[in-house]
Image (cartoon, rainbow, N blue to C red; front, top):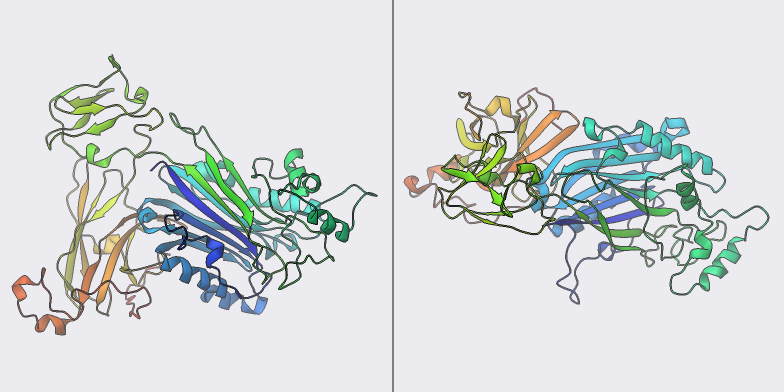
Length: 547
């Protein structure tokens, strides 16, 4: 896997409720194109989701209609909600495929208010940043100051967001420090013609009707956003794909007709920024797949805008190789020269048998004499980064509700630092949201004390006390979260599904000796249940919620 595909949606929904089927907005495979590739990430930015001052508490406690609708559609397709954040009517939703969840590192959300001089969140920005496959990604959704004549305020909004938006990781403490930044939203920039030659709304609409082959150059040369990007006043660090769709604002509700009370403008945009040469031996890039509007949605006075990009990612150093024990070794030779590890551009390790291994000796990379080396393409960089991981041992026995001491094990790679706030979440086996844990325990509470080992993987025994876990039979998973502080977390490992059953089922087991392999529990053989199962959560510990 060399790239990840991101699918972006930005839409000002004008305080309306979802009144149309949203499936086509997300461009799923259809009966006519069943082989279409699903994106690895969906990033949905909404503005003007209905939010009244008196409802702000309720908004924080309950999911809005738009989020609920997108959740139903995308979770049905197997996507997991990696993170979401809301600032009044501004919402950012980040979904990913399950296979990527354990590669999410340092997830953090942030917001900046710019309304009423920074006191109110009707305008501003929300963001989610994370590392994945050795690259840092920042996703921003904003709603900037409206009205054609308030260009200076929009410029100020941008600079305020860049200045005030900060993250805990030092190397990516600012939005612009990330390898990849995607900035979407209702940026509210309008078309701005010279004084005395400004056409009326009717004249602009007439011009749009004459446009051929999606060539909007004559109008876009008056676009405020492109002008300030060029002058360096705002967004000069970003790029935008060529616009080949008509203005997305302002429409009469329920129609495809422009509301001539406002000049048609491209208010809804998708911008991106890439630090291409942040790492040796690899050039990062974002390749555009598509950038367009979806005109048939009429519930708002804005049309939604969508974009797809493929982004280049790095290759992890293989853990299985690092974990091997030293054997008889010989220097690595490539192109008939003894080379330093940093200079090795790329190669694939083919291990002939269990006794083969790669080890480090002084400053040189060493390889056992019976190991075969095969060179591969130059851009498949060797040893780009290592990934901290936690692997849960398979849980073959059933966890009976109320067991005095349920135990299992997990193995931490040698570079995993255990933080006081690290925790184990218990999730429905078919969970759809990283925030939807059923119960949790801090690692410090459930890990059995052990003697420190030398450098290398560490196996920890987890002992869950009475009252831990769940009270409803079914199938569940354990997820290990590394959490250095209350705002940043990483997913280091997810267990395979395991069964939880009641003690009454244990008493009627026909063959207690074969409990691990053939349970007679009513849940045995059943597929993992959905994430909507009603489960009692036991928080007997007074520790702070890890989230």
